Amino acid sequence: MAGFVGKIENMAKDLWHKMGGGGGGKQKNASGRPSQGNSNSAQGAAANKPLGHIFGRSLAEAVALEPPGTSVPWILSSATLYLATNGLETEGLFRVPGNAQAIERLKGQMDQGELTEIPADSEVNDVAGLLKLYVRQLPDPLLPFHLYRDFVDAASLEEEEERKARVRLLASSLKEENAAALGCLMRTLHSVSLRSDKNRMSSANLAVVFAPNLLHAKEETMEQLMRDQAACETVVRMLVEDPSLLGVSGEEVR
Image (cartoon, rainbow, N blue to C red; front, side, top):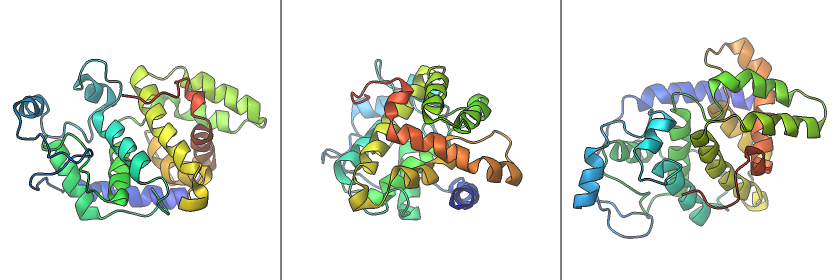
């Protein structure tokens, strides 16, 4: 039920976020250096990234805007690195909401091309909220619409090993950018779950938070949400507990 309520809350938040704007002055990045937003190289990058170049843009388009050899959008790699470095033991990570105004300000600055890294002085819960917002606003979820029913059916299999085998098979059909992005995210969530004695966020708790954003139908009804909630959470929990089901290596994604 918590996942269903979260889905409704997310829908309301999305409407609010669409009304937000950018702003803010010069920021420091995650390494503590001043933002390069005023440098020639950053200006060139910003010129190639129009408004809305991060949030709400398809994953394939976002990756195409990155430097050659980059497999995930910078916001995903930067946010997960920031959280892995600063937030793994934060109680309620991803469950406790960040400051809505701070999240909206960061979103606006990124969409304006004013930030190229997570500012070093950001609050952990704000970065976690920003990451959830990015994932939620993808036009096609990381576990894409066309595989929704297949993943739900896989979670309904009785034997655990059979469920794993089916999920692994389905994951092998993901586009390269989806597999890379999911691998980046799931490795971080796996690290969070290993510290659940400190942060109170087990794999099951993380699945409740992320399932509505990672795996959902294109056309949703209340009946369908209620019927499939447990299965969606099962799939995400499996991926959090065993990111290797995605067929990606344990090396950090660039």
